[in-house]
Each structure stands twice: as C-alpha cells, then as structure tokens.
Image 1 (cartoon, one colour):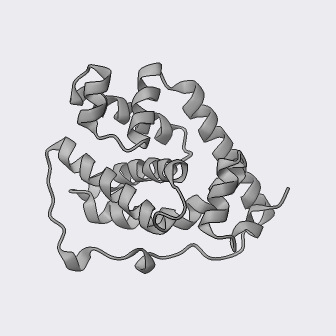
Image 2 (cartoon, rainbow, N blue to C red):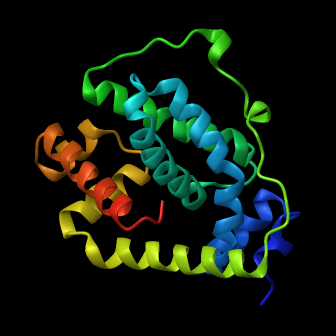
Length: 191
C-alpha cells in the first residue's frame, strides 16, 4: 500500500473515486487539502468567535458528506465542497436564530484559501491513518440510532427542519442530536 504523502499529487476526482471504491486511506489527503477552506468559511459565518470551532466541526462533517455525495462532471469538487460547507453554515445560523450578513468583500474564492503543502513523515502518515480509523469506528459504534440517522440525513444535505419532520421530532431535538455528535467527536480528539 502506498503512503499518503504519495497521494498529494492526485486530483480530487481520483481521490474520490478511490474512496468510493472502499479505499478510505485516500480520505485523509482530501481532508487535509480542504480543511483550510472549511476553517476559512467557519471564520466568515460563525456569528461569534467562540462559535468558530463548532462551525469547523460541522463544516468537516459537511466535507465528509460532500466526498460521499460528489458526482464528477456536474461541477468541480472544490466548488461542490464550498457549496456544501457554506449551506451547512447557513443552516447553523438559521437554526440558531442568529443571522449574519457577510459583506461581499469578505467572501473569498476557494483559490484564495491556503493549501496544505509539504511532505509528511511516515510517522505522521501512520498517526493520521490511525486517527481516521478511530474516528470512523467511533461514528459507527458510539452514536445512538437516532443520532446516526440525524447525522446521515444532515450529511445528505437535509436541513434541520427537514430532518425534524422526517424523524417526527422538533428542530431543537435535531439540533441537540447534532450537538451531541459534535461533542462526541470533539471528546474523541479526532476532528
């Protein structure tokens, strides 16, 4: 098996095709490539500085969902990721009742986001692989059935209100479930 540092030069489409074929080790370089974009968008859309990390968490979940839902040929993956993450952050603002208007000059393009460049040591690669595997195991095992269904619907692009209606619960219950998911992920120190 190749080391992850050998995957840096692969295109997004190649990485996604490999991930969709069950080779989840290709997810880590893709996440590393787009985490700065998620962080930049979180800083733009979080209504308060204290909310930025929560927005980053939700943005990373949206990024993971974008990897799963992306279909080549419709738009570039970079455009699709930006759209998915932005939509998630707008949903967070709507759900919390805090609306924020972003001045057009503050909205940057994906090309303006810093890229993660550089060689990684073999040790860093192994640690990243272990972290990813632990995260996926945690998601599959430690979430309740309700939390898992809510997370799956959220990753599919459903808004809080849609999920609440489908589950027959309040929007607050959906928000609480996603908060618990974020807390569990944060406590596991893998995102």
